[in-house]
Every structure is written in C-alpha cells, then in structure tokens.
Length: 409
Image (cartoon, rainbow, N blue to C red; front, side, top):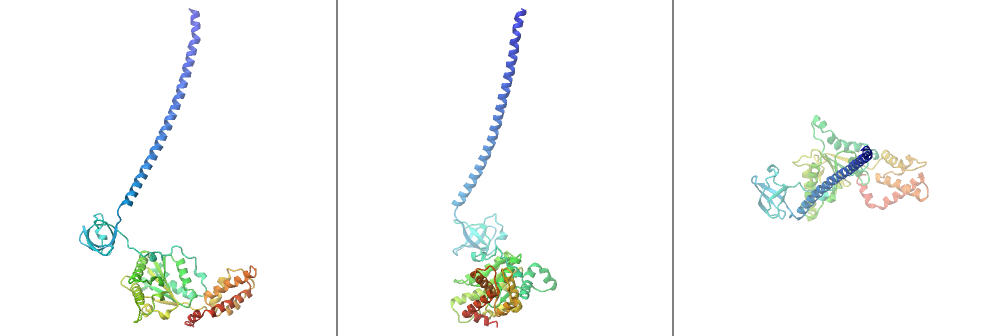
C-alpha cells in the first residue's frame, strides 16, 4: 500500500501543473478574445460614424437635386398689399396679378416697390428679395485700396486740406458740425488742367479714409436706352447709402454734366436726363447724410450751371499748374526714389517752368531711361536736362494739351 501511494504522488503534481498551464492558456485566450472584441467594437463605432456621414451627405445631395429640379421662380414687384393673404404684383413681363402671399412672410416688409420671388405656376409670393444693383454699379466699389498717401502728393497742401475738411471731417466727426449748427458740405468739385493730380488726390482719399470708396467714370453713366443712365445714377446713390459711410468719386463728370441746350439729339437728351437724375440725388428729398461726393473735370467751362451752384458741390477746389515751390516738392518726391548723383534741384525747377505734375513725373522717367540707355546706374544732371527737352518737344507736338492748358493761364 505504501508503495502504491508513493507512486501516485508524482501523478498529482503533474495534474496540477497541467491545470495551471490550462488556466494560463485560458487566460491568454480570454485576453486575446477580449482584445479582439474591443477592436471589433472600435471598428463598429467607426463604421457607424462613416454611415452617419454618408447619410448626411446623401440627404444633402438629395436636397441639392431637389432644388435643381424645382421650377424657377419669377422676379416681380409689389404694387399694393390688399391684406395679410393677398397682394397685387407686377411680374417681369409687366403683367399685373392679384396673388396669394406666403403666410411666413412679414406683412410689414411687403411694401410697394419691394422685389419678390413668385411661384412659376401660381405666381404666389414665396420670398422677399433685396434691391438689385447694376453690375457696373456694384463693381464700382473699390475693394483693394490704392497705396497712395497724402505725403506723396507735392505742392497741393492747401487743396488737400480743403478736401479733407469737406469730405473726411464730416464722416469722422459729424458732431463738430452739429455743435456749430451748420450742415457739412455735400461734395467737392476738383477742377484743373490734365495731369495736375486730381485723380491722385482721390486715390489718396480712398487709401486713407475708412469709408467705402465707390469710383465711377462719368462716361459709364451715359447709356444708350431711355432711362438707363438715370437708373444707374439712382442705384449708385442707393449703393452708397447702403454702404455708408461712403465716398462717391465721379471722374470726368463733364461727360454727363455738360450745359443743357435746346437743340439736342436724342442721345443728348438722354445724357440730360442722366444729369437731372444726378442733380436730384445731390439735392433731392433724400438726405445724403454720411455719403460724400468728389467729382473731377478738366473742362469746368462746359459744366451746367445747376451743377455748380451751392448745395450740390459746396466747394470747388482748383488744382492749378504747380508753381516753383510746388514743382520743387513734386520733383523731390520723385527724385528721392531714384539713384542720382550731383543733381541741382533749383536748376531743374527753373527748367520745368509750366510743367504739370504728370510732365514732371515723365521728366524723371525719361531721365532714368537716358541713364539706362548709357549703361549707368545713376542719373546725372545732364540726363534731366535731356529729359526736359524731350518732354517739351512732346508737349509742343500735342496741340490739344496746349489748348487745354490755355484755359487756366
């Protein structure tokens, strides 16, 4: 019996070892299964998230397809509001209808003249639209400002001061005029020979002011069809009021502001209608308030008297041909940017008598070209003297420029 018991003891130890190995194996298998389960759960969550994203994208694409397949809406204008349910509208083809109004729209916003969208089938008013502006007018807003500063304009300190007092001061400090008890100027008219800095001053105003700057050339307002020019002027001032504080710059205003004559063609009469709309906007029932006007022309002698009277352009600033001190200031600005050697500024001022600001700039450019032609990196006094003679020859050949300059002698 003792020998049998002795032989059984090793077997029990082996069974225990096997049991421990099996237990460890089961634990390892459990851990692996647990890790696989966690991994599958993570993958399921990621797949569910992807499915939700795909569902949202599908819904968005379905909505886009629905909108693309929906019939177009007709643009019309409200003529009268009968009650909360019905209104009188004029469609785009000019036909007048009594139609139903979407109950979700506020009746207070439905006023005569309001642009609305109409259902193509029932012509019911479905939504309100903002006022439309001509692309030429809306594109006139200057988004990227020029980098012209006031200190880059030489010889026009007094003229710049007058312009800033009439344009920038009322926009920045309107309370000053209220304390004094006066109305600020509505606009400034810049007159003077070509090339004396009228447009450059306007660029400086656009660069320095924080107001919306809208630039329009007078010839762009002269349209072919009856009423188009007046409509553009009306939309131009409507845009300025909506973007206020704003500054409107009308360059070459003589294109639409010439004197009105009795004997005129149909084209002249349309230009006169545009002028009358401009006069009405400048001094009409609707106050301009935070909208200021800057106009420029080199032909003030042909402007209509109604445009020049006080109340429309309260200040007429003349930009004359630069005198000696002004020419020195202009030349100093241009020469300071050039690589020069042994330049006599008094001599240059004496040689350029009668030159405009554009002529002085052309002189500096021509002097630089002479130096480049000779293979030099510095501009000498002789280069400027040669450039002055070249510019004088060009001015003598340009008879139209000479005749325009004689108006201001």
